[in-house]
Image 1 (cartoon, rainbow, N blue to C red):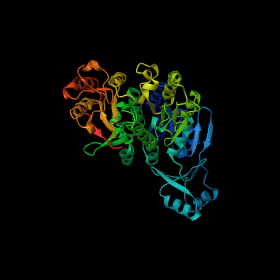
Image 2 (image 1 turned 180 degrees about the vertical axis):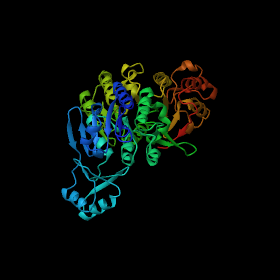
Image 3 (image 1 turned 90 degrees about the horizontal axis):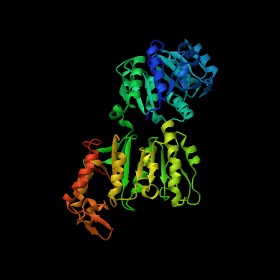
Image 4 (image 1 turned 120 degrees about the vertical axis):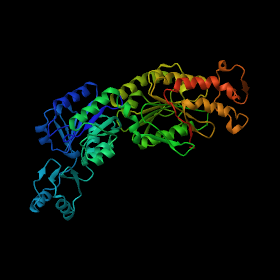
Length: 497
């Protein structure tokens, strides 16, 4: 599952006229039955919320007072996430005719048109407070506190990444909430500005809109909405026409191949750093210690001390932690047994928490032969292979068959490039036709002679080359047959790194 938690606003979203309808409650129960989790994020004060919403037990956490208060219904634990404004501030507001005033554990709230008086009072007293609006309500909170910060604290306790959440709301104070979630939805009765910012706008209003989103999540985990979720896609580079080329951060199977010293590690490191900038987490299985330190990642293990599975999993349980696992300290014979132990536990962690979002195996041939079980049981693994043999490509084709998206990154000499699998055969044919030029010599060394027994042999690289384009027809047809349904109409692009 990609989306593990639904984070919903209360008034105007989940509730209709302050009450949650029975049909909406039933949908929430079905959502929980699927193994997912619920978080309520509201501007209401907790005491008021308890009176109007008797089913708070459905939510693992309640973020109340517009992000200033964290409440756990199962235990009754209440945690303020900021200081309350001083009593002198509240007294001065009343002296200046502001009313009614509601005072929570942290929040102080009133109504329009008193916002000007509130702002002038904050200025006159020299306080560091902020004002947030919510359909006529004027909320005064400590600086930097909003629904996004409150939700972040709840997700930290739940060990879930914001990239595995769906947020839904209707008003001005929901902008921060929706922006912090991987997928954002606005109900039909939401403000126009929020609809413009949301990834999804429901056709139904209030609780019926929430039910609509829940039904889509339960049906296909929002896979049908993927074309609308491009704001998180990872930039790879530009194509020949100068258009940006991006890949989705979820569901993409990536194989990076090339000869030694062709820039594979640099390519992979650049991609991982772009993932880290956007808040995605990763785990790199580094066999030879090529990665060293990557931004926002913790290095585990060294040539003198191999890491343990327990310390890897302990680190990765945090929703914001990435790891570079250095296995160079393990004897080569012990690497496969180590991965056999680690991989199922990583898969279990991902099923529960959704992270790490990417797993990269470096030097796959060294630690995981094509028929090895650890990679076979993990269809979510992103690989960086060290071999350029066609047998590796065919193995990857078999593992990738049936996935929504599959792509291939190539590293021919000093010019890494990005290519969809549909067009790989055409690229091979084009480069093979220019075999006499060293700069355009095809990078792909084909060791499977059964495809063309009459090919000529290159002594320099001990591989079989096929200089005539027609020699690649079997390769091209094989690749097209396996991937035309996955990446129909895709194009190739070349990216200077």
